[in-house]
Image (cartoon, rainbow over all chains, first blue to last red; front, side, top):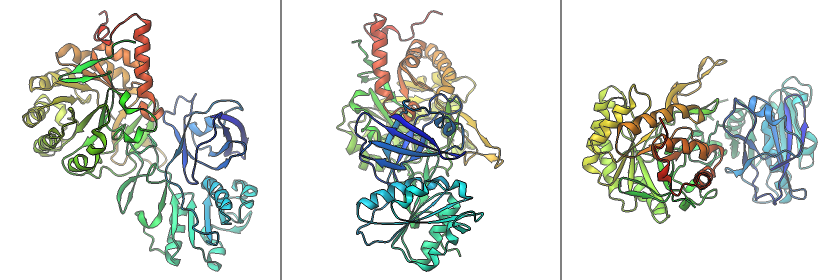
Length: 254
Length: 303
């Protein structure tokens, strides 16, 4: 693919906007891309990055990248017009609403908010408006809030209280006051476990997107497995989205 | 167009490019990326007599020019392969070779015997890097006696082409190869992964769930190449070379070191079309150098 633009969102996050000479393939929210990092002697394998947004009119794919290591820092150095080798789309995405009336809550933390934007956009095409519950450590780490607002109501938490309600996403008053038909979450593992425990308590179906370390990305090497009620399953093909009831998470906690 | 055909025992390959066990699944996982009929042979992932869950996550750590893995032979067992997977493979026009592992001689032999019954599977690759649970967990393949005992037990129950995959974690791989040849192996393939580890310095513990794992990728190529060269001089049976092959030029090095065929493993993770690219690259190299057939370069270096 070709780089259309590289936007530095803040010191830790960068948005890559990619295009291709052919039309982008069919993709589902929750799927991911395996990106090859060239020019970094310390990285070898591709990096799996969620599909953040698809703009069919401009034939553009967005990848939201957190710069956590050599590979992701190298991606931030890409220039407009450069090529980026990608294998896509991979994995099983989020469940979609069965009717426009279904109330979906999309919960994200940190860079985990990425796939939820595409999920919101696709739901919009189906006549559905989800609620987004997005959390970060501090206001500066909240990502793409203006984009999310185009697709639904946005509720925010920050750990230091600099924006929205203070605390974790599971502390937000929304969860005490409203009921939802389905919860989809993506973010740090402790956040997803807390959201899943909450969902279990109130009897709401919940899906989580896992981020296990991957090698092949296509279900051949068995490195990225997650223990589930169905045995060890590859996060790259059976996931990354899983029904939280299938995972080995102890959901019966207060 | 050069002649790329090679023979491993009674097995005729249309080209010398195979895929390494554990890196290509059952081949079906890569169907969207490459035409499977274009590959000389697909060695499917390690199969054991009984189903195995494998090791806990994390099973992988990236390294410079490579990766460590400790998957632990997760598979649904030989019966599942025979009943559920084999029917999906048998009509695809390439050679499917089953990689067989075991923890006891009886397990190896029985697993091999069940695969012997599958008409369209022309060969097995024996993974002797498994720990022998009856002998304190030492890998069969780390001694001549251990290696010979597995090959002998399997040879009695398996009648088709038998390739033995050697472990590099030994003092003298050539003598292990000779022991396998003496017991009737049709070929030896090398190398399996090199034992290594990685430590997470913030968590102050090993990255891998079982602390150590197998290193693969370009990092191991010089070791693999040296071992192929040593083994090819020590045995008469054909040698299959693998270990860090990423390009056609890498493959050519292995043929010149004495390999009759090569396996592509970790490279598939970087580029899922690598197998076909390497096959075509080998052909181009031979054409450019005026070679009519791959046979002209096998074992052909001045030394």
